[in-house]
Image 1 (cartoon, rainbow, N blue to C red):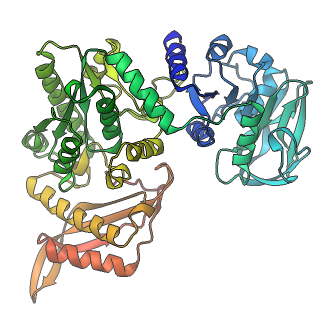
Image 2 (image 1 turned 180 degrees about the horizontal axis):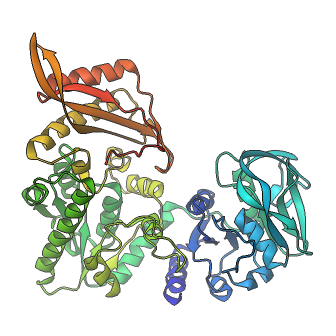
Image 3 (image 1 turned 90 degrees about the horizontal axis):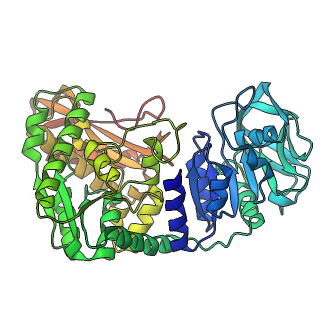
Length: 532
């Protein structure tokens, strides 16, 4: 915990911004709470629920938020510091966090016969405090099976649901509040206003911005690296590009070696575009590694998608270690920079305490070469306090073209998992050509920025066709486009039929191997966004 609090304090010294801390009890919306507060101009950090209250106060926050949780407070031991009940700084409990605050004050919670889920009307008893300026009737988004059946003595109810459950509460003498609903989601009609009222109660100056982050991140890089050298991994995605640009602006071209490994599994022209961007910004020591033949050889005869992922990940780390060794042999103290996001660390179980679940493994968080560098204090991660949408804006502010800053997500294994079956050079060329046509037409139609992710897949199917009065046997391209907020759920995007027809015609005419194009209209769930 000491390292966590020290790093947080250093950040705030440099940023000069007021902050609100969030204790994460496992809610799927915790990151969304942090983003909403940041959007209001106040810096937030997510911390483990067992963080001692004295450690929280040492970070000098203006307020504290207790997140929701899939767990229950009913009959369960409480893992947070009970001193939170006596907090002199404002506290807001959300959903589980409200029930937890009630229990800390010796109130009780019980499972409800009927839970409350989705949009629910609530009635406010008071339009003061966190409800200042709101009408007495509100629509809120709920997701809870337990309810408060007895409020602790120092607490009073300030809102009630249509089903008679306590929907909000506050302390009679301390600035402590609770809501049974989720103000951070857009389905709560005045959620932003409620969070803004809490910020006002905390007396926060709304001065945090990404511009502040850029300057403080650069200063932190200079302080950490000193006279050393930085190898900065650049995949071609927005995260690694932002991290590399921050290092370059902080240290200059002589201390930064951008490293781009071309796996041969990239989109059309992607590696050339990445290298051209870096060189055009004065990064003279670019290390470009063409490893396409190595990856193709390793994938020969492999059809299983998980095996493909494993092979690609292991080989990438092997090549990475090889390249790092070449540079380290020059005798300089060498740091490794990567585009790790705040969400990457959280999802990998890093930085949120011993109760955190590993949601998914990220290649830039857990591999041995990264872990070894991390233990030596030789990892530079300038994005590890910000979210994906913030990184995109940061890129634009540093002069990265919008076409790259707002590029659709692309999987780490690349086109290998968009070719269903064995990956060969000819299959890659076929898919790459079809995918480029698809994206080009979406851009021309002005729809690219409305779509969360769009791509083509090459299916392991041969179909009969007729071209030039002759019978043909060709392959099938499946087109996928989805709309989403965060990638956790998604709906297929309703591309106009005229556009689909144009795309299909172009692919069949310009990609000789293909004689059939289909469009995927599956939502997530039950499907996933990627096919493999």
